[in-house]
Length: 249
Length: 249
DNA sequence: TTCGGATGTAGAACGGTGTTCGTAGCCACT
DNA sequence: AGTGGCTACGAACACCGTTCTACATCCGAA
Image (cartoon, rainbow over all chains, first blue to last red):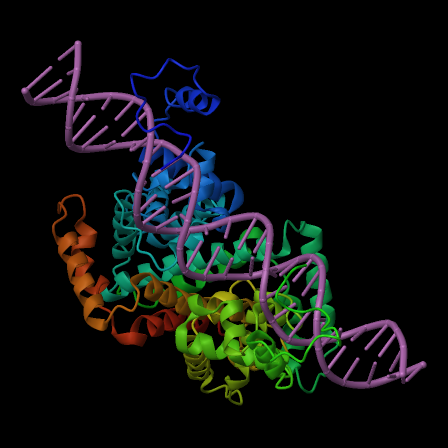
């Protein structure tokens, strides 16, 4: 009640010089940022892109916008909604082709590659996608396009619908795992990773052969990276082969 | 400095009755729990099992052990390590059969079912597994057994090694997604989930048919849950079918 | 033109988190 | 018997999401 901020400047009072705190307040007020939902979502995406999922906090978003966390809640219900909005927004960039029954498998491959690329470019989005069906205004078009490709494969309806789920989960999980591994190792260079792989291989080779025959036999391919996309492509191919065995064509 | 806890009771002072805070201190000291790493890990697992991942905090673990959070750090580097230890510990219960070339696919299925069950029974462990190769004392035996099953399928070495990775990722991601969905919805009953699915289906049916023909066609199977394991089994089967197409047999 | 109300802003606070610091006490070994 | 090292743990630090509340500003009605 007895705060330095005057609740109501009485007119009878003499026109005292404006105290400093008042001045800064007045100075800030005109430079009021609009602070729209769009701006908030964009700031969130920027943070996800540069600093990852764990760095995304309401305070951080607010700070990047030059305001306080409480102000965000006028435009966004809570953090979960913010994440969902950011998720949907990034899907603008996913493209999908006209389904071609002759090439549907390759088309699925290409679409998943594109999705993976986008998720990779915003580390943390993959984490946000897990457990959520991204049915925002943009996401729903992606899902429609994806389902179209699967339907072009002449699969039973249930197989097409569920396969969409499984494949999407695989892509997201792949990026997420990569993201985690990266953040654990902390900016490890390609050389570090190879050194670690070599160390691991050495450990496996030192295991008693009669107890670990299979690991010894597979030690080499286990730590063969296959390039940045090799393993991803392998898993995707595995599922597509499985899908092909369901095709009625 | 001027705390109520006496640093050195001067002998000249009269034998005043022991103040309550002193009493509790004295009473606790003799009943000093050993507080081993094992006990901490066990407490953590107990919490995961009963209250889920979100309930697992250092303070909670400490409270269950009748101590303070700081005490845990003498036995465990940080929360991440605690989770990793819990992860390896839980693998004691994963069993794997002697590889049988005639039944290897079914054996893989069973092993993955078992792994999933265990991960499900300790929500949060799945999250800890992502991005990590759980090569603890127990985990390494599991990996060996798994590789043995895959090798029984007469697959190229690279296929066997990478497939192990992909399948394991799928199982873990499946549980993790389930876990997140559960924690987002917050204790939703089976009825709630079905109501939500019905609502979603209604929304999809309300979409313009010329713009969303595929989603409309697949609306029913998309929201068919297939029971608690249906979709998991489907995805597992998809990958095994893909693997079968790699088998030289 | 003036006055209210609606709306958006934001500081402070609540109850939580993981982790660190410093101190106190116990144990075992010289 | 003394002492050094290990462990326990309260307090504190820096965060988190969210809410409360006071406060400016703007807009429309009188």
